[in-house]
Length: 372
Ligand code: IPM
Ligand code: MG
Image 1 (cartoon, rainbow, N blue to C red):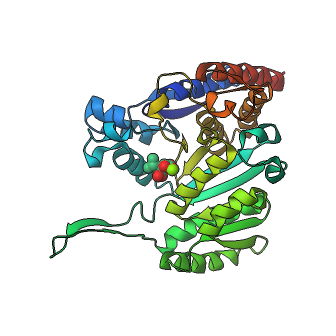
Image 2: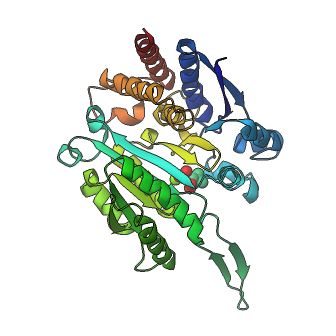
Image 3: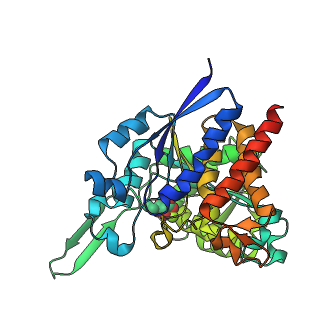
């Protein structure tokens, strides 16, 4: 009997459905060449779900995600003005993304920051800084810290408004993500940058204490501590020094977007959000309402998220590599979506769909060759 992989598909908002349409084609091509099948079940999620059903993460979507082996999620969110039409608690970030992360306890967020030599011209950094390309694995804690800490708004006796927003971590929460980071560092270059702010934040003091404890079991891994602000500078001046980086939730949100800038586009940032039982995969970027429906969004991060799913949820490492190779190939052929085109006059600009066509054609050929 051939294997069946159940995948929940959450297209999301704005450019979400357009880039998702290209990404899901990858499953069809793999099915055509392998003795396995993917069962894709689409479900509403985000602002689209709120307007259709009154909930950003409806019960039936939860049931579909619960039953799936893995979840593929497009970006969600609307423009600031449009978001105001949705009650705070149902706005897609608070009402859908954070509950999704909490439901599956996806504490380890893998954000690869990769720029092959052939893609080097996409980066705004000088070739002397990019050298042979960039290959960083940023690991962000995803279910703790400021995002999930207690929040309180109020008015004091003098009538002044105040807010409390707690940065909360337990040692177990810190340990579980550090273990993932050390494992990755061990498998890669035995080098781990620990990004912290222990000169100011008590949360970082605890984080570093736990890190020293975990490090005892990973003596083969060199740990390089770096303050988060200094890390922001170092990423621009010499990204090549980094291999695996680990950090708490908010630091990771900010530095991963900076990494998108270093690559040349957030459209180049796929990600995996991994929990104890299940993982979901999503581009790190937003839903870009300003370019929605124009067939110009870059589907690389969405397709890359499928590649990450193939590897991390289904151990299809070979197929995953062929997906990456296919996308590299399209760039090498001189095609790119408009977000990247400015990096070189020689690039020919293609639509979201045409980029997808070209990736799928290459992948199909590569899979045929691999099974021949
Ligand atoms: C990300 C996004 C989310 C985050 C938003 C959309 C809630 O920026 O995945 O980086 O802040 O985590
Ligand atoms: Mg972010």
